[in-house]
Each structure stands twice: as C-alpha cells, then as structure tokens.
Length: 125
Image (cartoon, rainbow, N blue to C red; front, side, top):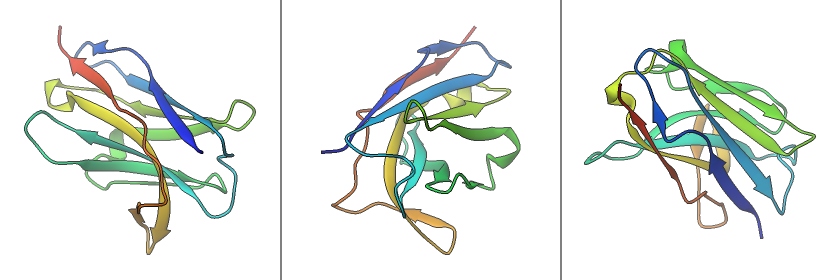
C-alpha cells in the first residue's frame, strides 16, 4: 500500500515562497513509470494541477504556474518537494500530492493510484 503525506507551513506571507514536501512510503518515487504530482484546490473551486516530477526526474508544469513553480526530489528520502514563489492570497488552497501516469504531457490518476490527505496553506500577512 502506497501512502503519501504532505508537510509544510500552513501559513505563508504574500511575496514569499511556499514550500511543501510529500513523503512517500510503500513504494519508490523512481519506480517506472509513475509521475508524482502536486494539485491544489482553492476554497469553493475545483482541483488545479500544478506539475509533476517523473520517475526519471524530469519535470513538467502547468503553463499558468510554470514561471513560479519548481518541483524537485530527494530519492534518498523518497520525497518530492513543491516550491511556489511570489505567492498571493489567490494561492490559498488545500495542496495535495499524488501518484499517477502521463500521456502526452497530461497527468492523470485512476483507481489504482494514490493521493495524500491534503494540507491547507493560507497566504496572508
């Protein structure tokens, strides 16, 4: 059973960088051919995909967030990390990490994949 757990500050000030870590257990983030994503859900809105880091270490980001997003990994700790710079209150959301697949640079997850429980991040001074 694969488990994902998000961790990081629940409160970030405007203009700062949001940093979240996803710790994976029960499976390796380097296992072919899984893609490890960050997704968020602002209050009252739908899910928004942010980006992924592949089993190979390659990354791909949502075009709307690409200029502010970086996803990296630490294979020794089986973790991957999201950094979102220059945050504003519009970045307030529940942030999820998840395992899925990829087709044509589009990330997807199905009933065989796994999600973390999510972590609330509020951007406020």
